[in-house]
Image 1 (cartoon, rainbow, N blue to C red):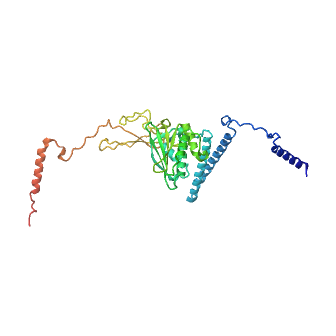
Image 2 (cartoon, one colour):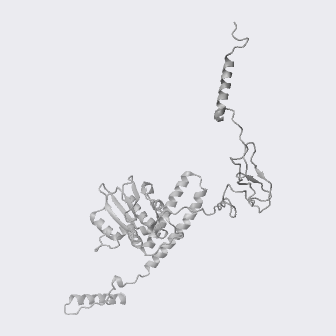
Length: 391
């Protein structure tokens, strides 16, 4: 037997003898433990930075995959394979959403590359498109307002998580309805209604406390089981949204999001599309008289190789055709197409109209003569000729 084994065995026997003999003082041979600081005094440690880096890497991979999928979808002609690509693209959208939620839980601001004002109906559509069971979502009445650019993405994320919970915790065939109504204080109330099993009253109280930003103590809910609502709570506090859950009398749960009026605006008018040609200048151009019945314009509209077509007018003299073209004039070339310009007929003297053949427009003094002529004509018509009336 080796000497090291003998030493270990003797050491164990000595320790056992000390514990069994009451006359021998007992002591702890292990080093004293250092007391841990309270949670509020502990530093964040490296984990938030590590999680943020993982979230950014996942986002970068998701955006790269989305670009590849978009290129493949554009070239695909088979409907079955195209549907599979759409499903992969939708799963990639949910991956990107989870990575952004991780940044929200870390307290990081998820910046959008192109923030813009979004109408509420597009907010609902964007939120539904990021949910796995989007086909079951029904859009009800949505007020015609928009969310300002700095809060649009956060409102979309809040609505996305509520729609995701509603579709997951309701029957597979039951629809989920989302709507938006104007409130008395000028805000908007978003409603998400499902027909699921509902929530236990104790859990409902705890979840509403979490959504209000003041979680109740002690917390009896598992945070890992309510990640979506944790994201909603963070965003609600950041944008001053009021989110609440209530139980429906007919079964299921209603989630409401009160969006304050400071985050709302009118739907912006659509601007010109990017790359679209500029609209033509208003006619007539600057420097010309705006009265269409004024004298003809002195400045030509077209170049030397472009005839100028003049408008035909309704008041042109009878029997005189209106001029159609004018001689070529010198000037800066424009488009190479004939331009129509108005021509005034105010200074023209209209030709006298021919007298009417009927007596409708005759003066009153001509009526007796016309009546006599008419009677004479009727008498002549009734007088038989030499060949008429014979057998």
